[in-house]
Length: 381
Image 1: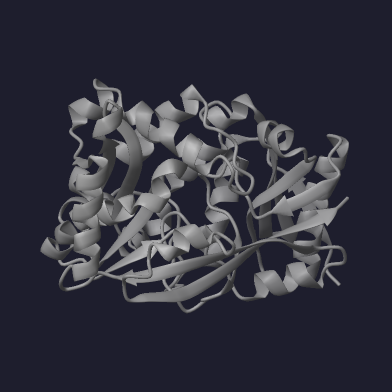
Image 2: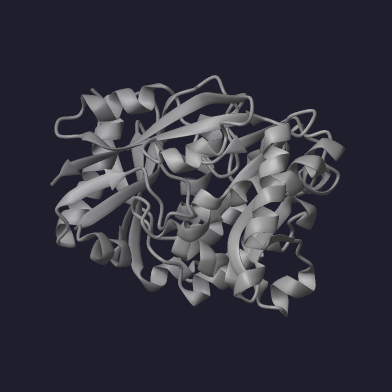
């Protein structure tokens, strides 16, 4: 049996090795959508990610026979722990070869780190916050990933579930939603009705709205309110909101973003739909997650020229008081014609809790296919 060595990441060079391991492990995989190297570097760097205002983390590499065989991040989100009354250390950015001694050693490193910080459970895969990818893929390994979800080999959950003490903490589902050739008549009628009855209206954004009109901040304040009761969520801070405005809105095609305002409440923001053309195929063409020399062109073609058949439904949410009013019909009555005009044939939902039937119900009017499942695991330590 070969000796497995675990090393803590302590230098920028080692962090680069940590990030690059994913590209090595998934080279040539037709379903994995790799993160951009620069995005991972920004997220994992303690001087760049605003989540470190309330998080702490360490990163570990596993070596077997002198070669990198796995990686994992150990993360403590103190704000989430306080909110949910848990003492959790999270594991994220986990990748490993098909060797159970490697995966076991990686998770033990996270457990040991958690114990040293007074934690009593390990949970994951999770990121720093709910805005990071979460959940281990357990079904749908033959489906193309997305830029904001985790793809992993089928042996990953087998390794976790074979370890003593691990159990499921949360189940997730993901759907592929067909864009109809014609707006469903019932859907269109509901959209007209809610607009008239409740004085709800569509708001399309400009760059000026986002940066000078305060809409960027308002959008993420609504996300805080909409997502506050979801599994593991911790409210975004003003610093995080600034970062996410740049991440989600700076380069976005504003045609694919729709807001719903309440005309009876001084144009209060009632709901949002932030969607982007799928970057999955474009990111696969970015060699080892790099935009240069040619990766930027593939991303630009997908993002601005709509050279893709899919759209990622990144952030869709409504304040609780509007969910039963059919406001989502008004939102998608604006977006669907825009998808049709660009040749978009399907939308990809993001990770949804299996128990969140309210969210899943909004896809019932469309040709919808459940095509991925994933889990978060936990273990007492």
